[in-house]
Length: 117
Image 1 (cartoon, one colour):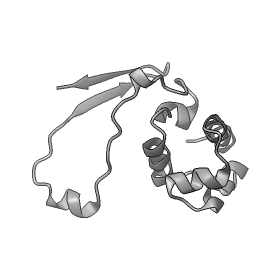
Image 2 (tube, one colour):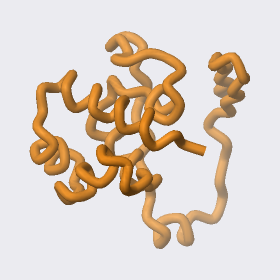
Image 3 (cartoon, one colour):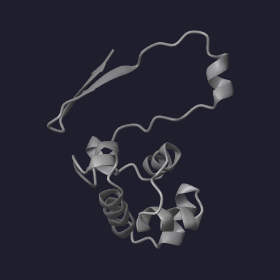
């Protein structure tokens, strides 16, 4: 479960790092300004869609760090991973055969291993 207060501090750190205002940050990730305000104030929890938009717009932000504070921010450019594009439900329905691209195992100490073909 996400700690709202800690998440809000990390989100504010991202906004400050990029020298964005809450309004410009909201515009860049494609959400309403009120969404940012409500998350920063602790009123609302971030949705999965919100988190994916942040990660898509800011590749230096690491998912594990954003969600629970473990890891690093900003991720050095040479360590940035290719951002996974999300598909619409219609696209997924049309897909007949799915193959595994990689498997990631997360350990309680914050480390992880990634296995790719």
